[in-house]
Image (cartoon, rainbow, N blue to C red):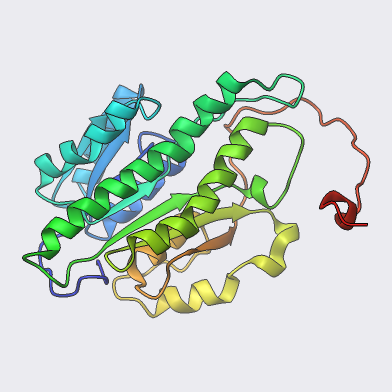
Length: 276
């Protein structure tokens, strides 16, 4: 359950953005199976979101779907208050929703970059801000209450390629925001990043540490080293904040695929950073 606030007996509530399909849906189902009430956010996937909410409701005491365009600031600011009004409280947010459109340095434009920055970084920051405000209000009557934000990052931050430029920049911005949010929102709200990475980055992985710590937590039966388990660990383990859990995982096959990569010359690290 929600280890950050052991005195609270009511089921914890989590908002999962982008929960209608793919990874967001799997995270929502994982948390519902652990007893979390789940607010299923979606933008356009009405039927899929309804199905996810119904599937979650079979596993937990409550689940509802909430529609919001994360590229619209007003809609983002209204999202968490709407969820709070429906559930009475929110204890955690998993920012999984992402705009993911292909561009390169040749096709790059301010408009495309801004579109990605709004939904992938800006929305996550505003929702984190809203959760902190909510937790601060609750803490006046419940001093022990705490919240958690989990931001889903991307393996491209550790495996740079010359494509999906705007998407990668937005995830890099969210990665930087993790550290700033963790400092700004502490001690009421923890902030943790979770990112899948490819096998060649094995030295960076949390690996056995994730399995060990997951096994030591209550109600944690599955110790598979996947992204959903890492999200659950981030929510449960109160010692984790201001960092990113890197998880070895196969990349999804249903995302848009880039054209064949263009060969680029190798640039030595020293020169890349402007040193001679």
